[in-house]
Image (cartoon, each protein chain N blue to C red):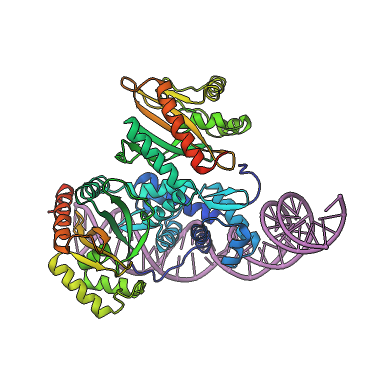
Length: 250
Length: 250
DNA sequence: TAAAAAAGTCCGGTAATAGTGGAATAGATT
DNA sequence: AATCTATTCCACTATTACCGGACTTTTTTA
């Protein structure tokens, strides 16, 4: 939670910064990385050698890319949770029965990350999976915020702010806190074009066996054809109830 | 390819070793990691702080786990390839039409890693995805070997050996090279219980637009009900042909 | 409940090494 | 062929990663 105090390892930080840069750039040459991270080519070179050695990167021609070792570890991170299999199955069931796009995301370090994104059992184009969302302007996000203690909510808003993504994004903290208040009263969150224009979504938080928030499930779709919020909320709530009972939430 | 020569960064190597250890252990406490990697607790502690800071790890209670940042990067590694979307769609199509388990894997650093694993469009339990396979005892693997130049094949066998996993595993290099020879002649590989007893699979390599091997596609299932090899091979070959032509392989 | 044990955190000094500049090599471009 | 650019390697020095040990917190045991 608090990143304060204590020393960090600069070398590791640099190596990981290179991974981040390669991820953002898709592919990169050594000199591009040297420029971007403002390091000498010789320094970058040793880092790259080390990362290639560990299979975190691959070199194709002169271009460096992310290695599949990261995919291997990433799948480990996703699947090595008690709730993985149940959450996956329930997400698919809901997508099947509602026919719209369903997303399951968990909170980590103040953002939501998509673990599943399915449209009627066709694991959609899949480019959403692994994506980060802010909590203030997504249905999963606001559902999660509504389930967190207010101190934590404020920590998160301090850290990430309330970036404006459409003209409907709530950028004022008081307004957001009221929205979250309403969300926790009625049990579901609503995102009305706050992330993408023309897109509405409704989300419900999922409680973890230990008591905290595990994540949230949401249904999203175009404004003009999505059923009313209450209807979506009740479908979500049913699935979440089943999910939680399978996980042994009391 | 050659990991020889040049210096490496010990600090980065240690940090990544910690990630590996956490991955293998599922979850780990600091002292367990200190024991396992034979480092002082103070050293481990700085590494862990740094990795938490970068969101590569999460701390739940006293246990450290892999963070979803790794999942984020892993999805980046998987999706940021020109062929990702086509390969995904073709894998699903084949699974649909053949009704058996279909796997798409790519080669990296001498092993195959599963990118897709589908049973009739139900993305199966999914625990196979992200898994590494040896090339010498899997259908995807032998298909890939058959498409690689012999020098490379020998490099790979030198590095990984031919570990025995069942009594049917080919553990002799000469025998394997003959098998690969036959594979490249007939255009498909056969894995007859070499990885798991009772399980057979047939694989076909996929050529990349640049000319090399991209990966391979295979169909696998229990001995007693899987159609004959030739039949599976021709289904696979049809899909691979379509895949390659969509990718613009000449 | 208290005491002991274990685990985790922090700090200062020193030996190890990460980072730099610059030289050498390899590749691309004209 | 010659120039330019990108990558790799090498040797030196300042930096910093690592350890020992003290301190704090948590867990176990009596």
